[in-house]
Length: 224
Image 1 (cartoon, rainbow, N blue to C red):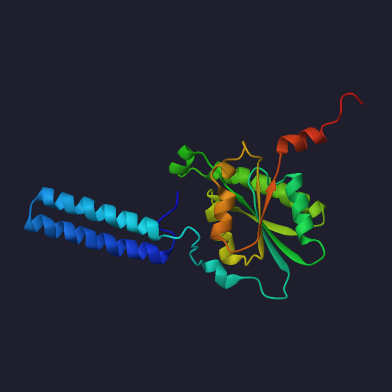
Image 2 (tube, rainbow, N blue to C red):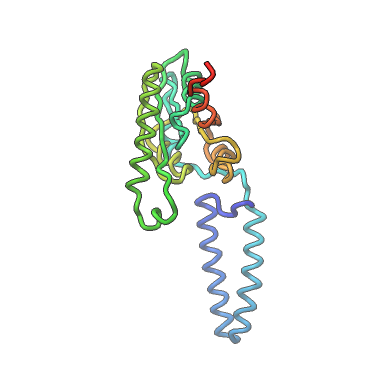
């Protein structure tokens, strides 16, 4: 379903329209009665809602702060990596090596601190951030072993917000986004890849990391 409010301009217009709507309802209540006011509210609300929805463009992306901090021409390639449980996966590490070989590159790895809904609403994020930091440290160590110098940070539990936050200070040239395979990835179920490509005007590479397959491949064969 399309989101009818996708930009600051649309949000401002929506506020103005709602103010006019409530003013019309108040006037109808003064001049008529509560049933007249209710009828005006329903008629205008339905008309405005349909109009805003039909007018909205799903491809519109709100200009963000990070657009003013893009990488300098001629400078090192800047790659933003977003991954949670798959952050230390071999497939992701291989893609980072591939995307940065043959030239100087700056790598920022962001691991969103995913949390349970209960802990999120109770503002108990310490454990989630500690676990994310452990995965991040493992990933950075593996990259260093592969000859890739990178820095990392724990990000917001919402991956879209984590990308936005990182791009405010890190002028990336491209994004690498890692997920579990289909059927095991909440990010894929929420259509994260498509939403990120629509929201951020940057090349985005999606890497699928099958941790179960990688672990099985590392286990010694008992028949040998």
